[in-house]
Image 1 (cartoon, rainbow, N blue to C red):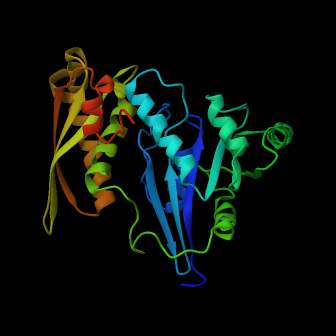
Image 2: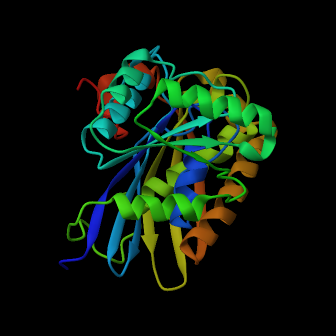
Length: 296
């Protein structure tokens, strides 16, 4: 264990820059949900990558925004905590971006004493000239950061960045058992899979008004039986989620079940219900129940 390295590597950045895609590329498992909508990640999700002589604990965080309501304030608390316990920070930006959407976070980055890898993502859809300009720009903005050009989606330069992370890790014994993949319980991934389908199939405010609660999770040798409730804020949203004769809800259920069968490598029986939980996003007690550190 003397030569063993371990540490916390936290990924931060604006919404939709590819943080979840990067995390999943490193871990090799779909731990964070990925959609084209902003604010997909609400929690801080750990993904653990183990080798014989290293343990990298990656942390995907919500995209940085100026909070408009209680849920978003809690999401930003997760980002604040990512600054506090990191051994290495991965600051992810995409081509054409100028700075974090919250200046206070950017100031924290500038004053950080820990290694920062600035990952310029989505370079597969950019021209060489623009890339060179961007590299110059970020060298001026964050002179202490090491800049790496990547495409998380195409897996370009991901291995090289990961090797650099390992070289920067402090010597330490593993923090988690070597066969552990994440810090989240199984029900969390059931909830996130259902929420991903809602983000994909519903428009406007609906996906942001939804929270999932998996009330039952029973596993036996051949099958896992789950019962999950989709919480919405208003009666009108309940009707939209269910759809004509239940067709929209059925589609969410079928797609989520297929993904969960891949994730758990086992047959899944999923029951879905919809309930109204008025204004849960602004209710500290409800937020706490759903795992957000409201009021902290």
